[in-house]
Image 1 (cartoon, rainbow, N blue to C red):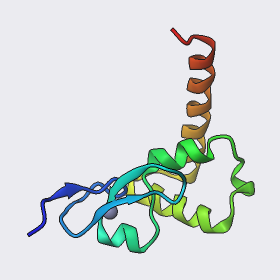
Image 2 (cartoon, protein in one colour):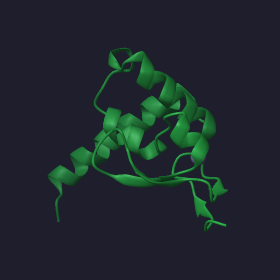
Image 3 (cartoon, rainbow, N blue to C red):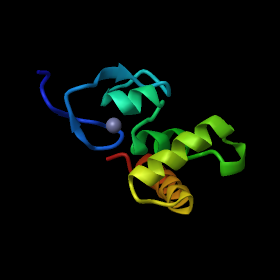
Image 4 (tube, rainbow, N blue to C red):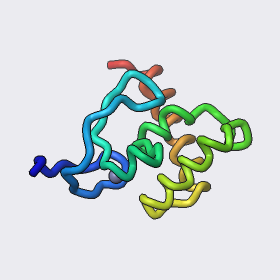
Length: 99
Ligand SMILES: [Zn+2]
Protein backbone atom coordinates (compact mmCIF):
# COMPACT_ATOMS: atom_id res chain seq x y z
CA UNK A 1 0.00 0.00 0.00
CA UNK A 2 1.23 3.47 -0.88
CA UNK A 3 1.94 5.97 1.88
CA UNK A 4 -1.02 8.23 2.67
CA UNK A 5 -0.44 11.83 1.63
CA UNK A 6 -2.61 14.94 1.71
CA UNK A 7 -3.85 16.01 -1.72
CA UNK A 8 -2.80 19.61 -2.43
CA UNK A 9 -6.11 20.25 -4.19
CA UNK A 10 -8.90 18.61 -2.21
CA UNK A 11 -7.07 18.01 1.06
CA UNK A 12 -8.05 14.34 1.30
CA UNK A 13 -5.54 11.80 2.61
CA UNK A 14 -4.96 9.25 -0.14
CA UNK A 15 -2.37 6.83 -1.35
CA UNK A 16 -3.60 6.65 -4.92
CA UNK A 17 -1.98 9.81 -6.27
CA UNK A 18 1.43 11.14 -7.01
CA UNK A 19 3.66 14.19 -7.04
CA UNK A 20 3.05 15.97 -10.32
CA UNK A 21 3.99 19.27 -11.90
CA UNK A 22 1.16 21.79 -11.95
CA UNK A 23 -0.01 22.84 -15.40
CA UNK A 24 0.36 26.46 -14.24
CA UNK A 25 4.14 26.48 -13.83
CA UNK A 26 7.25 24.67 -12.71
CA UNK A 27 5.98 23.65 -9.27
CA UNK A 28 5.11 20.18 -8.03
CA UNK A 29 2.40 19.10 -5.63
CA UNK A 30 0.78 15.89 -4.46
CA UNK A 31 -2.43 15.20 -6.42
CA UNK A 32 -4.86 12.42 -5.55
CA UNK A 33 -5.95 10.30 -8.50
CA UNK A 34 -9.32 12.03 -8.86
CA UNK A 35 -7.86 15.56 -8.80
CA UNK A 36 -5.11 14.58 -11.23
CA UNK A 37 -7.61 13.04 -13.63
CA UNK A 38 -9.95 16.03 -13.49
CA UNK A 39 -7.24 18.68 -13.88
CA UNK A 40 -7.61 20.24 -10.44
CA UNK A 41 -4.98 22.63 -9.06
CA UNK A 42 -4.23 23.76 -5.49
CA UNK A 43 -6.47 26.70 -4.51
CA UNK A 44 -3.65 29.03 -3.48
CA UNK A 45 -1.79 28.32 -6.72
CA UNK A 46 -4.90 29.33 -8.65
CA UNK A 47 -5.17 32.53 -6.59
CA UNK A 48 -1.53 33.47 -7.17
CA UNK A 49 -1.67 32.61 -10.88
CA UNK A 50 -4.89 34.47 -11.67
CA UNK A 51 -4.59 37.25 -9.07
CA UNK A 52 -3.95 39.92 -11.66
CA UNK A 53 -6.59 38.69 -14.16
CA UNK A 54 -10.21 39.79 -14.28
CA UNK A 55 -12.69 36.90 -14.05
CA UNK A 56 -14.11 37.56 -17.53
CA UNK A 57 -10.61 37.38 -19.02
CA UNK A 58 -9.99 33.87 -17.62
CA UNK A 59 -10.61 31.12 -20.18
CA UNK A 60 -13.74 29.01 -19.48
CA UNK A 61 -11.53 25.93 -18.99
CA UNK A 62 -9.78 27.62 -16.07
CA UNK A 63 -12.98 29.18 -14.76
CA UNK A 64 -14.35 25.65 -14.39
CA UNK A 65 -11.19 24.49 -12.58
CA UNK A 66 -11.44 27.50 -10.26
CA UNK A 67 -15.14 26.89 -9.61
CA UNK A 68 -14.42 23.27 -8.67
CA UNK A 69 -11.56 24.38 -6.41
CA UNK A 70 -13.89 26.90 -4.78
CA UNK A 71 -16.46 24.14 -4.26
CA UNK A 72 -13.82 21.90 -2.65
CA UNK A 73 -12.87 24.74 -0.29
CA UNK A 74 -16.45 25.90 0.42
CA UNK A 75 -15.78 29.25 -1.22
CA UNK A 76 -17.65 31.30 -3.81
CA UNK A 77 -16.17 32.78 -6.95
CA UNK A 78 -16.61 36.17 -5.27
CA UNK A 79 -14.42 34.96 -2.38
CA UNK A 80 -11.87 33.73 -4.92
CA UNK A 81 -11.83 37.19 -6.49
CA UNK A 82 -11.38 38.76 -3.03
CA UNK A 83 -8.53 36.35 -2.27
CA UNK A 84 -6.93 37.51 -5.55
CA UNK A 85 -7.30 41.16 -4.49
CA UNK A 86 -5.81 40.35 -1.07
CA UNK A 87 -2.93 38.49 -2.74
CA UNK A 88 -2.14 41.51 -4.93
CA UNK A 89 -2.31 43.81 -1.89
CA UNK A 90 0.16 41.55 -0.09
CA UNK A 91 2.45 41.57 -3.14
CA UNK A 92 2.32 45.37 -3.19
CA UNK A 93 3.12 45.48 0.53
CA UNK A 94 6.04 43.04 0.12
CA UNK A 95 7.46 45.01 -2.81
CA UNK A 96 7.28 48.27 -0.84
CA UNK A 97 8.61 46.73 2.38
CA UNK A 98 11.13 44.07 1.30
CA UNK A 99 12.89 43.89 4.66
ZN1 LIG B 1 -7.54 15.55 -4.45
